[in-house]
Length: 404
Ligand SMILES: *Cc1c(COP(=O)(O)O)cnc(C)c1O
Picture 1 (tube, rainbow, N blue to C red):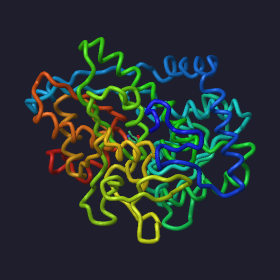
Picture 2 (picture 1 turned 90 degrees about the vertical axis):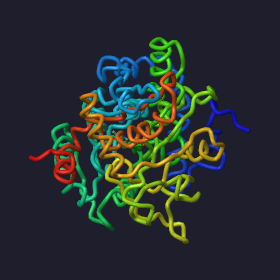
Picture 3 (picture 1 turned 180 degrees about the vertical axis):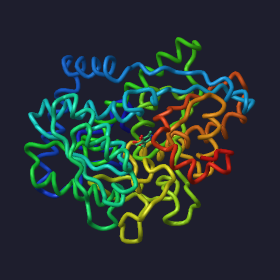
């Protein structure tokens, strides 16, 4: 049995999940990245440089807020929010993009590259690249470029090159494929910066380590606010980076309950959800093994969520393992639950959450009334909702009395 705190093993496995399933040309390169990361992860200098940016650039530590009115509205447990929405760029992704960009510099690369779906990872990486003086290419499906205009403009203003992808369905999965191909062509001057705790080893471990600042801060802040640890943690799960960032500091505290919330979208019919761990089976995608929504041949199937940051057919290998050992409960919230929670948090606390984060809030609203008021729930509020407001009012505004 592996110790939770020491995972993954040398080959990047969390139990049966993770690893590095790569074309031969990339095996050596990925091993170099893993070795270099292993070397610098404990270097004082690297750590200080990263934490200096967290403090003075990102604005860390992000506060914890006791959402009293939201708690009262449910008449149960006390709900607290870890405010990752207050970070520079408005979400948790900047935490790992800065780490990856710093690593790129240490490796002597002059360019960082990545794919993006809704553009959130692209914007965060373009930001880190601008700050650290690196070139940045972002691969994006043509359909997404059309849909996510403001983020495309942001990336360009930040000096990144947005590379349109016209293969396949011209969305996220094709952008990943295009980015992999570009990386294969030139793995020497560029570093592929993966946007969550997914992909081949060492990325799931590395992105988790960069996000673990969230959990370490939260543990200390919550203890000093209340004198205790939170009874329950809740976070939304796309690839799983914001969730593992919070969970990682509490894995050994067996009295702390943990819930990862996946999107059940419109229904549990194929193509109408992205509830990977609820509906998927183990398989291989993008160079690693995890729970996967797949057909009989093991090919990933189309997935859907109203929150584009959550619609990925795979999930981080550590989450896959934590599900099997039942340390974390993986649950679901639908589009409708998330939209309800989006308006509820906006109107009761004056905080507009990202649609992704609204899934975590939705599950908290379901859990809180089952608990007594002396119990607590800490939600990772992974991002702010500014990016979603136009879409939400156009599609759902009428139902909530918003006419524009
Ligand atoms: C991208 C994103 C997510 C989903 O990614 P994880 O790796 O699962 O955290 C969640 N919330 C916000 C605000 C995002 O931008």
